[in-house]
Amino acid sequence: MGNAILLFVFLSIFLSAILIGRAGDNSAAEQTTAVQQTVATQPTIPTQLSIVPDIGSIEVLNGCGVEGAANRMAELLRSKQFDVKNIDNASSWNYPFTLVVSRSKDMTVAKKIARVLKTDRVILIRTNEQTYDVTVIIGPEFGEKIL
Image (cartoon, rainbow, N blue to C red):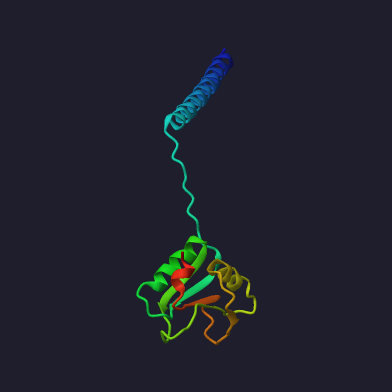
């Protein structure tokens, strides 16, 4: 008779554990359903992709002396997805025309910029200070280039 009571107690505990476990599973399922419903009812926020320039590392230098010329040229190049890293004045303002200077043997980026600026004045000049792929030196006809 003692063994029967122990067996009964053991089975009661075992069945109780199973029922409690199943109730927990239902609770977790209900929580998952509640979270899914909450997510479904929240408005979706459209993700806006920002365009990151990926064409070369460009330097724009004002070689004509017109105030704001380098900034305006940089805006044009950025709108065409070129990565303008530096805007400054050239060493002089006596450049007779806009010049595209490739700083590497691969002149692909320089030629793309030249097409945008509608010029064939592209040269290769390499120095020990190769910071940029291309340097654009703005001449006095820059207004024609950015229209």
